[in-house]
Length: 270
Ligand SMILES: [Fe+2]
Ligand SMILES: [Fe+2]
Figure 1 (tube, rainbow, N blue to C red):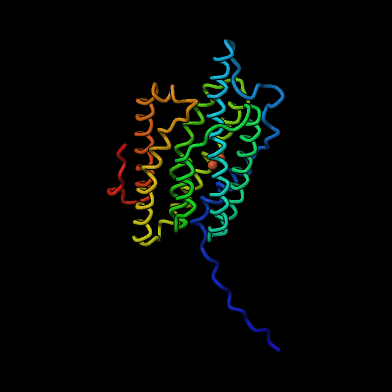
Figure 2 (cartoon, protein in one colour):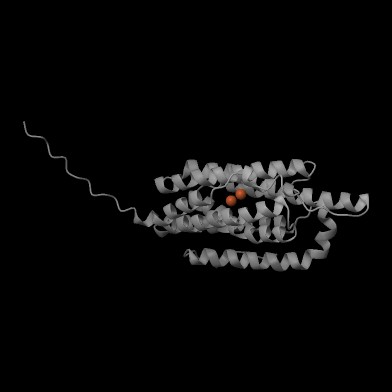
């Protein structure tokens, strides 16, 4: 009997996903462990001399900085997990396995630092609201854009700032690692968003801009929010905060433009 010839299916062209795969490789190379942090060699957070009141105020300040980052990474675990389960493309799914691990590892490190700094402080209500919107967004395009393209890019300068003011501590070391990791999260998001948006219908793009417009006012409140422990700095820094926020929002608009999105409807009033 003659063997039936199975017509060979032409291999699907997946070259558009090469960028996403490249970030998978990068993420594997950049992987680290919480035990690699200098827990035994360095103090967890900056140490000061002075009156008990001054020391208590400083400790409150660092606890609040750390709590906010812990909160952000706890939420990031949920968002990364959702991206992993929703992503329809195998290359993206593979990449998201690394992001889920990264965000869990970040949370693990922040939990240990929180413990070392005397426990959790007040959390940022606007960050919770942003996460709720992100988790409830309808399309994968919106989720990739809001989290990876926008948020992960804007968080990087904040890590640099924290690292600069916490020299010689575990916190500095952690922030330096997070700068690298979130750079990869952002880069992979850009690569994936490019593929997703290439053939996306106008409706999807329009919904993405609508989603960004719903998120932006909350992002503004999040960026300007100061817990009690940092209120006194908040008023001193208001001008700097607003300038930085304006730059962040402009950057977000440029990123959206570079992805071919029509940003004429984006509303960025502070
Ligand atoms: Fe993270
Ligand atoms: Fe991240």
